[in-house]
Length: 117
Image 1 (cartoon, helix red, strand yellow):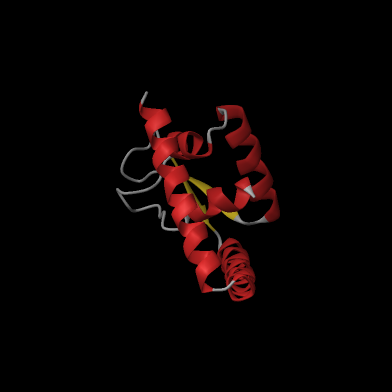
Image 2 (cartoon, one colour):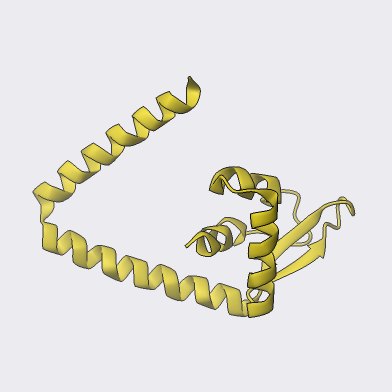
């Protein structure tokens, strides 16, 4: 799951962009260590899902981009997720989904409050 989140985060990265998502951003977003990110990148690279290149704008930085195979995997997983979510929403019904959204929004608000303390 964290590999998919990482792949989703870097989906718009390119070697010639100045607006790439960096590895420190990924570490912060996933709340994982530098070593865990490095291990995850190694695994994704071995699977052929990502490339690691030097940033053309700053040769000291690494840019992680998706390969065509990585983009296809991400697209397939997104489609699977959306299909499952549609089935869940249909099963629950409109009232339950509205109630779930309200509860999730309250959880997000409280989580943000805790993070700001």
